[in-house]
Structure formats: C-alpha cells, structure tokens
Length: 137
Image (cartoon, rainbow, N blue to C red):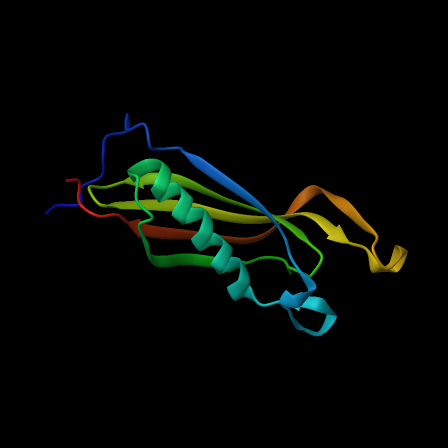
C-alpha cells in the first residue's frame, strides 16, 4: 500500500488540536522544580491521539518524533499549552507539527501560591511527529 501524500485540498490539513495542562509539583525531577523533557513528550502523545480520533475515528499510534527541540525550561507550577497541527496526510500516516508553550508560571518569590500569566507565551518545546492509523475499512 502506498503512502503518497493527500492533495492540498484534504480537509484534515491544518487541523489543530490544543490542550492546556497545569504541571503538578509531583512532576518536578530536578533542582529548581525543573520538569524532565519526557513529560512534554507525553503531552505531545496525548494531543496527537486526539488528532487521530478527530481525523480518523481511531486513537492511532505515534510512530516517531523528529526535530525535537527543547528551547526553554518547564517548571512545576507552569501551565502549558500543547498543540498539534496536521501538516501532511498520507494513506495511513499523518505528520504533525507540535509545540508546547508556557502560558502561566508560578511565582514563589511573591508568595507560596503566587502565579502569573506569561505574555507573550514562552515556546518551551517543538517537534515534528508521525502518527499512523489503521487502513480504511
């Protein structure tokens, strides 16, 4: 079975799914409440799953990551906005552009539970992923 890209008119191209998640202090892995990069990759998997459900009615399978870039730290107490956009559609595969942005951050210097909105949002992680879905029945 060929995996040739769909035409540019494919309605799945450009679909974007976005999740927001508060990063619990239980996720802190390093000094300074720094969170391991694998945490964000897990969030990418969650948003990619929703893309597959929306485009193909199946959870699909995240087959690979490419061009993963860790650009800024993620800390416990952050609120992350994680997005996936469909950039290529094949017969059974889809390529996604992924991004995680810090949209709010704890500010312990102002008080134990103080936090503020990060404007503009800080791009923390970007990646390209390929997901695969079962053949059409």
